[in-house]
Length: 32
Image 1 (cartoon, rainbow, N blue to C red):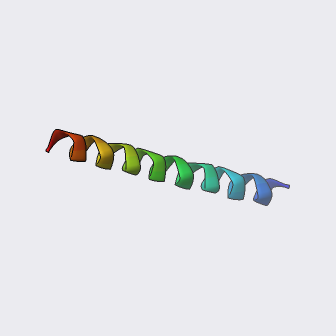
Image 2 (image 1 turned 30 degrees about the vertical axis):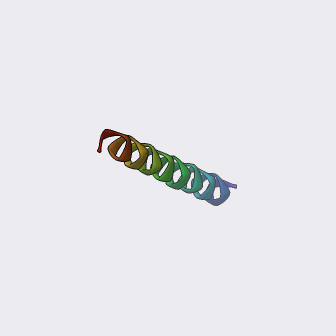
């Protein structure tokens, strides 16, 4: 159970990281 929770948290962290990356990229593209 504990392992599953850690895995889930890692997935959430990964997805959020990619979302932030996409957001910053779109903002940079909008600027230029």
